[in-house]
Amino acid sequence: MKLLEDRIREEGTVKPGDVLKVDAFLNHQCDVALFDKMGEEWARLFKGVRIDKILTIEASGIGIACIAARHFNNAPVVFAKKAQSINLDGEQYSTTIYSFTKQKEFPVIVGKRFLNEGEHVLIIDDFLANGNALNGLLEICESAGVIVEGFAIAVEKGFQGGGDALRQRGYRVESLANVRTMDATTGTIEFN
Ligand code: 5GP
Image 1: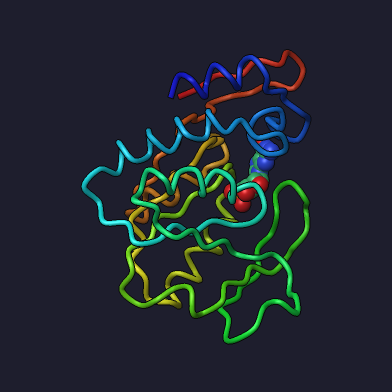
Image 2 (image 1 turned 120 degrees about the horizontal axis):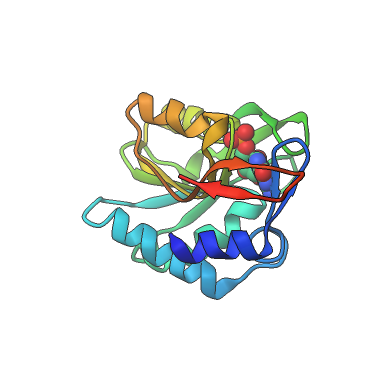
């Protein structure tokens, strides 16, 4: 999606350790008009596919998924939580994932009552790198017996391989910007 690629070129910064910083518009300050265009594009790409529910993970996925849901007939958005809390009651699906940016393991938890067997689910997230976060969500979807129709991703870092591994497993992955290479020294970013 040219709009997103242009924005990344203009305002994104490449940090050492293969980290792309896009906090001016995607995951700290949020450009809601851009999120709306992203939702519109995913709706075009997944046109004709039954989507009963959208699943994402806190925190950065939530805003993007909620705006995107407006383009999927206001499908309910469920977000996986990354910490236990007294507000989390009832039975839960949970797994553990390793965070690329935080460099530590943390739990991923979804209340069982929010994912029902046979529902068609679209998984949305801001970034896809090695695929750990999405694999955690997939594991929860498998336990719940829902049908994963695909992944709608804002920025895939293609060179880290997580997206292709999912595609090889037969999943549909639609990334609006797919970074082929990026260089922290020169600041150059190239897209697939
Ligand atoms: P993965 O689990 O696919 O390795 O990484 C995905 C998660 O890590 C995303 O949910 C995102 O929060 C974070 N992440 C991975 N790479 C980047 C990056 O380059 N920039 C930012 N801002 N977040 C990233």
